Length: 431
Ligand code: ATP
Ligand code: MG
Image 1 (cartoon, rainbow, N blue to C red):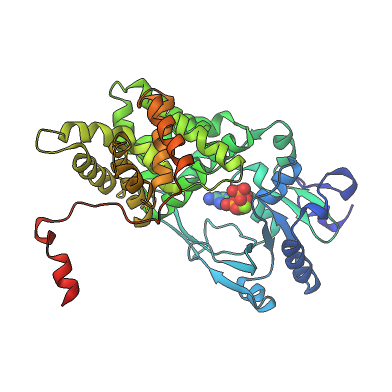
Image 2 (cartoon, rainbow, N blue to C red):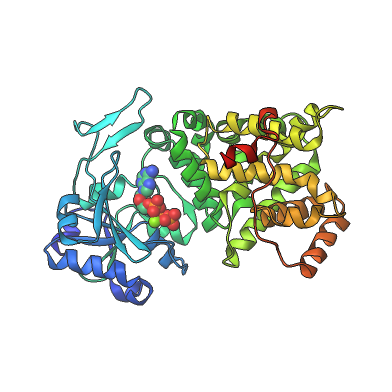
C-alpha cells in the first residue's frame, strides 16, 4: 500500500485505466497550470465541476484547480494571475477569455482564528489552509469533491462521490443543516446542480432546505444576484423555478412574486413564466444570447402587470402606469437581489414597450423597432401570445413586419419627461 492510501482509510484511488477522464477533454490552460504547479513541487489537482462533468460525459463550464501552494506562491508562478476574494482567497489565472480558478486546500476551520462565523453560524471568512483530505470534506456535495491528480492521472475519492455520481445523488458532505448554516447559498447550489445534472437531492439534504430557507434573507444582495443568474442560466431554468417553489425559497428571493403566487394566481401568467424559462433554456442550448434582464422581466411580470392595472385610470394611461409599477417593483426587489441598473432599466423598457405592440399604424411600428430593447420586448410579447395573454395575430404581425423592414438605427425609448423639461431642451443645448 502506498503512503497516499495510508493517509485516509476512506480514500479510494481510481487509477487512469479505470476512469474515463482523458487529458484531451481538459482545457490546455488548465493542463498548463496543473503541470507548472506540479513541476514546482506542489500538489495540483483538477477538482469540482470539471471532474464531475467529465465523469458525466458533459463539457465542463470551467476548470477549477486545488493545490497545496498558497495564493502568493501561485501568483508568483503565473504572471497572468491575480489574487481575488476576501471570504475565500483564490487566484485567477487568465488565458485569453478563459479563467482558471486556483484554490489552496482548505483545512479544518472550527477552532481556527482565521475562520469568522456570524451569530447564525455563517462563515464570513475562511482562509485556513490544510491538507487535501481536509479540503475534500469542506466542499459542498460529494459529487463536487473528486480530484483528478495530475501526478498520475488518477481520480481521488474521499467522500464516496463516485458512487453518488453513478446513482445521480446530490449528497451533502457532513450534516446538511450545519452546512447550510455555514453558507445558505449551498441550498441554491443544491437546486442548481439537481436541475442541471438531473440529480436527486438526498433526503436529509432536501429536508433541511425547508428548515433553513429563511437564512437566505441574510445573504448579501450582490451574491444572490450572481447565484440567481447561475440558476436561471443553467439551461434548466424551468426545472429550477419548479424546485425553488417546491422548497419555498421564492419567498426569500422574489418575495413579491411569491406573494402573487400565494394569492390565487392567474394560470396563464404562470404559464407565461414557464414558457419564458423554457425559451431561455432553448436559447442557451442553441448558443444564443440570453440576458438577466429578460429573466427578471419575465419573473416579475405578473406583479408589474397587476400593479399597473391597479394604477391605470382615466388619467394614467397604460405606459405611465407600467413605468410607475415597474419602478416600484424593482425598488422593492433590489433590496433582496441587487440587479445592476443596466438590467433593471432593460426590464422596465421591456415592460413599458408591451402596449406599444398594439400600435401598428403610421410611424409607430418603425419607431418601436428602433428601441435598443426591441428584440427582447418582441420575444417577450410573442411568449405572451403563446399562452393567450396577447392575441396570436399581434406576434404574427410583428414577425411579418420585421421581414419587410430593416431595423432602423437604434435609439433610446421615449421616457416620460418631467413637465419642466418640455420645450426647453433645444434652448439649453444651444446655449
Ligand atoms: P459549475 O459547473 O457551476 O462551475 P462547480 O461545482 O465547479 O460547478 P464552482 O462554483 O465552480 O462550482 O466551485 C468549484 C468547487 O468549489 C465546487 O465543485 C465545490 O467543490 C467547491 N465549492 C464552491 N462553492 C462552495 C460552497 N459554497 N461551499 C462548499 N464548497 C463549495
Ligand atoms: Mg466550476
